[in-house]
Image 1: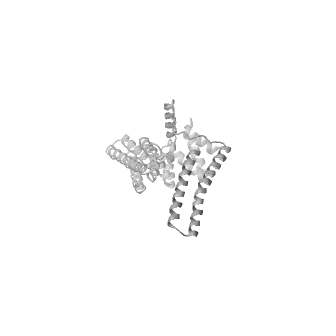
Image 2: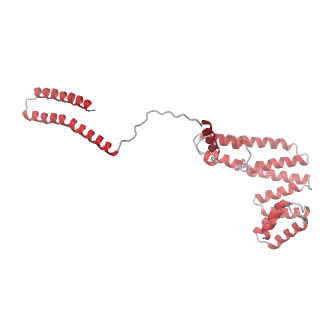
Image 3: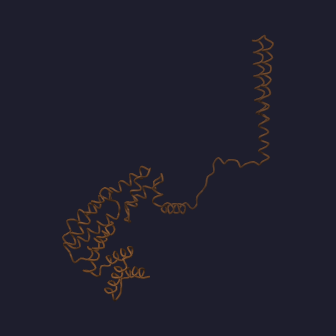
Length: 294
């Protein structure tokens, strides 16, 4: 390093001397020559001061300890690549849906595709949340999935409408229609219309098969789940009078009278349950009865 500095200093000194000679030839003023002299003298001294400063910094850094040198290139050989890949895949699959769709990579798209292929409760709620994400591809996939699922249900229901000439036909279409509504893939603007169609289908099924308890129970549940409490309770009271084995209607009445603190009506329903199921109350209903009595 000192050799480089010495060579550069010699070159600098030669340049200073050459410039000094040229300036002395061009100017005959004594004061101006004195100014040139000091400028050239400073030009000799500054490189030395710079070198001393660098030397001082190096010495101070050596006293504090040398840091590890930067490794320009280092190659790592992975022996457990398959294990790392499986671990990475498991961690990727364990990402919550709402966190996954907010990422900028392909995780959001994969989650949307997998969600579309698997029926889960409130499937549409998750897809609608993905539609408003900033990742355009994820949002596009989610919107496409919602459209495809809507068309799929509409096609199935339209086909089933021609098969409602039998009891099983009504059961099938009502099952699919309820699944369609609970999936939450129906847009808010069409939801009321779809619910009205479902209610009309239930009424039509009751009209054609007035002795089928299932249709009454589904209609009562529909009223209960859609904040039509009075209609749900009224229908449930009628159903258990005509069909005392209607478990779902007992649930609605017990729930309603327990919340509204109508003890007399609540005890009346409990008595009807015990009288009708004198041998053995169904396990699911028994747990509710025990909870209320407790």
